[in-house]
Length: 60
View 1 (cartoon, rainbow, N blue to C red):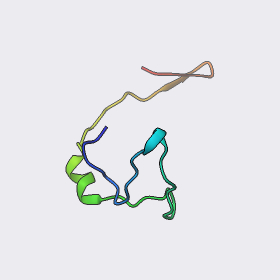
View 2: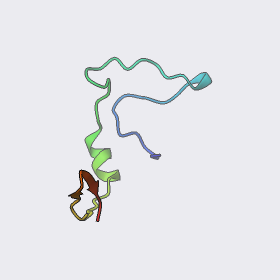
View 3: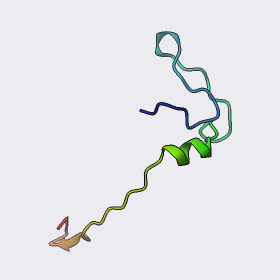
View 4: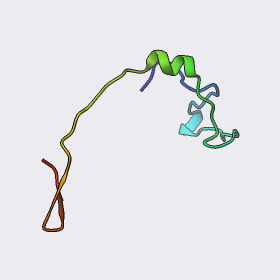
């Protein structure tokens, strides 16, 4: 959950937990890229590649 909106439109829920329709193109919202960049964290993960054995995908 975020303390600030990352969209330019208000997507909060109103009375009874209902939200209004999103009318923009695509998903209906436009990102506020400044807020998104400020609130984002950079992370990296490294995983071992999976191997195929007897027709099954195994995680190492």
